[in-house]
Structures are given as structure tokens and as C-alpha cells.
Image (cartoon, rainbow, N blue to C red; front, side, top):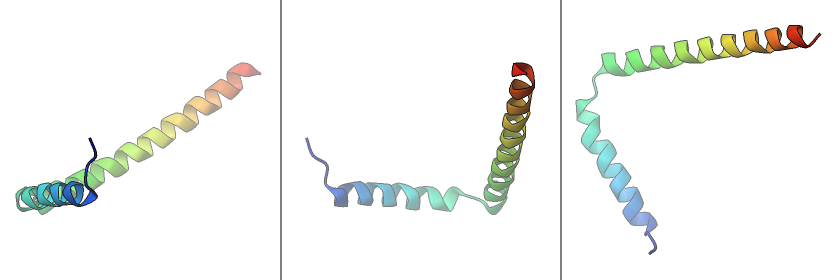
Length: 58
């Protein structure tokens, strides 16, 4: 069974346009802030673990 690219893009576009009116600016801002905070925490934890592993191997 093959999917047409036009059908896939139409479905994705329709889904996006149906969700768009339900998004509020404060939800988008909250999502951006939480994503940035998650990325920062993930980076710090991975650097800490890298440091601890390197220190443990010595």
C-alpha cells in the first residue's frame, strides 16, 4: 500500500489548522520556557555525569 505525498501533506496541514485555533500564546510561551529549561538541565546533568565517570576511571 503506497501513500500519496499529497494526501499526507493535506492530512498534516488539516490537523495543524484544526489545532491552531486552540493554541493560546501563554501555552506556547510556557512550552518554549519548559523546553529551554529541560535542555539546560539535560546538558548540565550529562556534563556532570561525564565528569564523574572520568573521575571514577582514574
